[in-house]
Length: 188
Image (tube, rainbow, N blue to C red; front, side, top):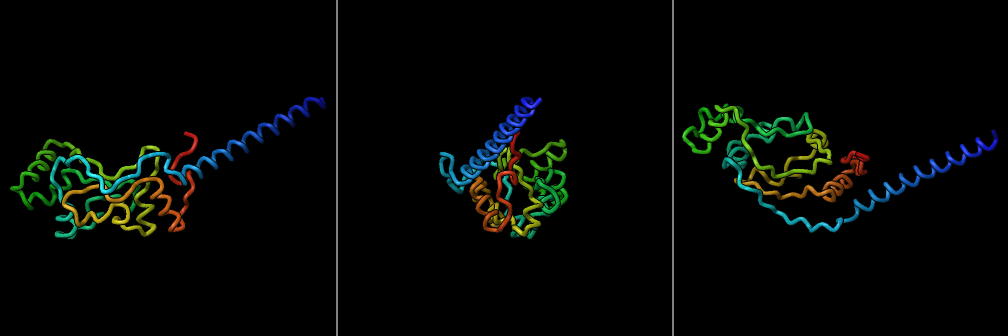
């Protein structure tokens, strides 16, 4: 019986040591990844994106008309995602505004056919990254800090980095959590 307890005790020690080693290596890898560019080419900004299916001017809507970002991009204050407005939503105004515009005609057609407009994403993060708009807006960040001066642009380009280093540096500057598990689901 004594031998069995000794064996079990040693086994427990080895299993415990193994887990301590795994946690230590994971922490080191995370710290290493945060401090490295991982050999990827430096991000060059601004970056153009493919042409949008409809010529849309944020400048016209945000600066000239004065619509705030969350008027069209609902969800930024309460949800993780900033919604892209549907064609039906756009037609609420465009039933009487610029009705003869060829671009508005594309929106009207999409609304009548109940089709989503295939907007080209400008700012994205990889699928394995968790990002919540409402968390950031509740922390006091303004849209311009992550998206650039969108309200002054007729055509959007990616002007602000969405790299891990950019986000980590912002978190550290603001005293927000900056450990790996803040944005990544570890172990999956």
